[in-house]
Image (tube, rainbow, N blue to C red):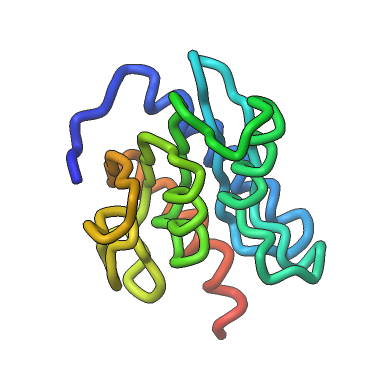
Length: 155
């Protein structure tokens, strides 16, 4: 994992954070994702598991589906995913399968992170694709969204 970010990375991560905030409208965990290609957002999403009663309705999955539709292919090449929390195993697997070349996430997930925290699907040498992964961009802002969501629920 590297930590050198490009100038536009912060802009797109802020869009992902804004998307994460929308999850609160339906009591979902505030995680957001955007997929960017050639400087344009081609997919975005926030957690909608509660809204859809769907365990796969993670921010990354929704953004990835939109991006695939936008490019007309299951291969989402030449794109970057910005996500506010380290991808879980399902989302990391989908990123690999979509051949996405780069992933930038904000906060690590020590309980379910599959991009280095618990295990590392995105760097697994036995898989046929390994994206570049960067972490830590606006991690404090992402962590604060999560704290604000979970603190009143865990009292």
